[in-house]
Image (cartoon, rainbow, N blue to C red):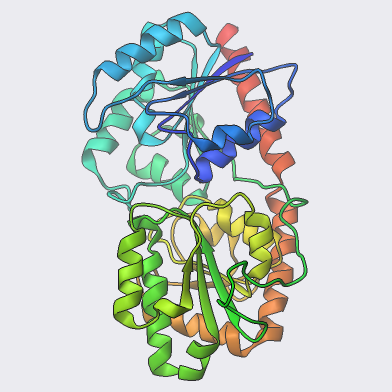
Length: 376
């Protein structure tokens, strides 16, 4: 089965990691993979273990670039795929190119919303999804929140929507002995390490975590002295976040690592994982932290509540509420036994509900069934 995976770029991110897992774990003798990036295939392609995967860069220009869809059409005519697997709104118009290139099966995945439309209320994008709905055979969503939104707000028929929750490798992401952050002089064994993983981007709202840290200094100065924050990632907001920490007087408590390939190992440095996002699908970073046995504080957005049971496998707080986030962090800091119990329960939940094997099998069945229905 020849599959084209169409995405904006193959760079570091949650949906990109899902794609890498699918390519690496779908049966090698049953599937042929072609990855097309509207812009460029980035560093994440180095994590694909198969040597027979084909990569293509369409070099889309910034803003509107109508010619990119013509270039896609020409490429699809050459590849002649059985199925196209596209990701998020940026690639949805590829269904038009696919239609004129021979009408392969089109499976479109919604993994979350963009920073400029965190609630999915952009009328233009809603209308675009409705108009192109006839060209899409199946819409995949990764959370119940996205499922409801597609059905009730976008008006996609229920029969065309398939919920497939994200899964991770719980052997790779697993509990380990507490280690210190690999930055000399940043922390010692007495420090409480608060960490998060993600692109430094407005919708991830790491600024909210920095503000919560500053509020901690007003509420509990001793707790602030004990605390260190690690932002594991990089992105266009890096300088802005560093300046915010400087202005709020917590720059010495902050370490922005940049992108790292040793995320599973660095999670062992953390005492608490925090996800301060304004919107999410089913975030892989939470699943990775939970699989590592870490207690989690996360904003109650998107599919986060599908993953975290408040007070049982983690702590939920409202988005963009620095004070609530600060109070949740302090509760974990001052109640270490309770905090570790939540981390243990979180690990058990991920093993039960979010395994990589179950996710890959769901995609395998969907891809094969859609192709079979197309040929009948």
